[in-house]
Image (cartoon, rainbow, N blue to C red; front, side, top):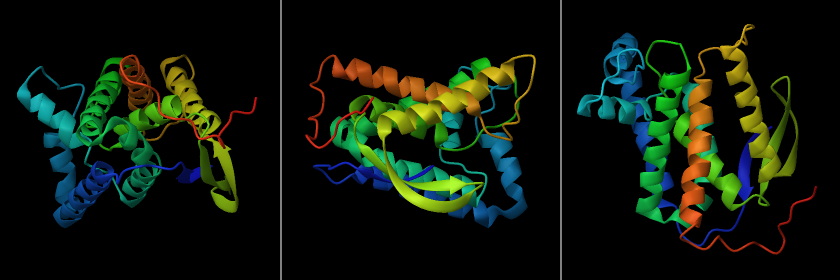
Amino acid sequence: MLPIKALKKTHSTPYITYGLILANALVFAWELSLGSQISAVFLSQAYNPCSASFSLDALWDLTRTMFFHGGWLHILGNMLFLWVFGPAVEDFFGGWRYLLFYLLVGYMASLTHGLVSNICGPIVGASGAIFGVMGAFLLLYPGARIRSLVLFSRIPIGMTSVQSFYLLLAFFAIDFFNGLASLGTFTVNTGSVAIWAHIGGFLAGLLLTFMLLLFNPAPDVDPLEHLEF
């Protein structure tokens, strides 16, 4: 399933989410202008777990890697997920606190990939941070319905609404299985996807949101939302 829209009311304009989408789009436009030189830029400016060090430069690498993307499908998919899940999470966190959260889960996602995966090379993309946003959404709004496009062999066959609890848990479970399998005695083809960045980002989002909920009231529950077990 491909999420299209979160059927969740918000009480504020998600300026930070819009700003992040715009920043990613501008960086991608700059990437396109570089042509074949982009590979060298990724090698020199994106986070590479095999050559990382504890320094200010490494922090900049971790930051830049969240705004680099490897192609049109990569950025369009990531920005769609940020568009769907970001506004409601920002609505709860508040603008600048949400931005700090986004950066932190992005850092933790990349570092998890570096600690767990044995794959060398630069990693690029916002998906680790966005999985953190998805983890926060799961904890904050488990009953919210997500309007989703149903795909069969990548062919759209219809639309449906799924509660975020089930949809986001399914996304995480698939990546978690593939991540564990990639470390085992048999291999799973994950292409060039940094699966452990997804896992680390999602868990970081859950953890940071849980910590925030210890000191802040949970968001109001829409009376029309309910879990069906």
